[in-house]
Length: 303
Image 1: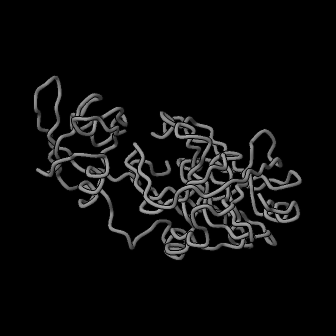
Image 2 (image 1 turned 180 degrees about the vertical axis):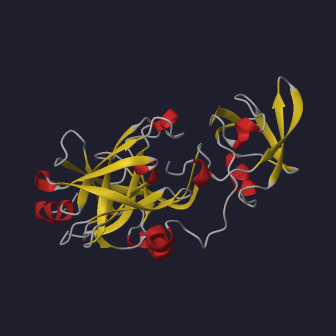
Image 3 (image 1 turned 45 degrees about the horizontal axis):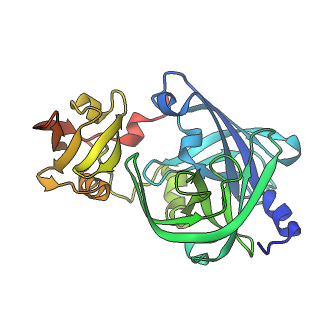
């Protein structure tokens, strides 16, 4: 990796440590726990910080740690539950903001450096380097699909929310998670999503220009027969509609579901509140369930 120590030191000034405490009765604690550690990147010198949503979702208190041990309380500004980004803000002036680029400033095989807070100490930061191995679609089991993602063979150096930077020091992505089941690699959400929706997120606290997506509240894995419900969010729309772990989803509103992507694309043609008819195979019998599409953002709203 051809990146100078001086450049890394400069970039680290914009990387922060995030500690979030979440109410025990918040629905996200069943999956993520009631204490979250994460990273963030200052994107505006007035105190605006970009991170990933799961780090701050449901947060009662959000604390930000800077280099040299300084700390500040943060307020939640905006959440994007579909893409997985969040904005928080601290009341502190004169911060060093990252030079925010767009996702297209990196291409496959480009060298990148990933920066994040490790959490062992609020002022400790770590850097890793590698190559961009994939730019394109990414899908995951928690009803998640990015039409554009950045995957690199640089492992996530800290907790989610750190920055993926180019060799010229531009922020190109927000590091979301490690992909250790694939290899020592990591997923970053391109900053295009932040660029495109920044103003409405700051103004409304969410993305209002994108059509709302129906949500089932399931964890989906692909099998030869279709898409299997490998897990279910307690009291989520799928749970309330009668879906169970082990169900194989065969169709949604009479559209065949042959892949996880098929399921998501079909599901997202509908908005929260719409009636959905799912045909599932359970115990070698075809069953039909009527499920009311949910609103993920409302379900996981701050208490």
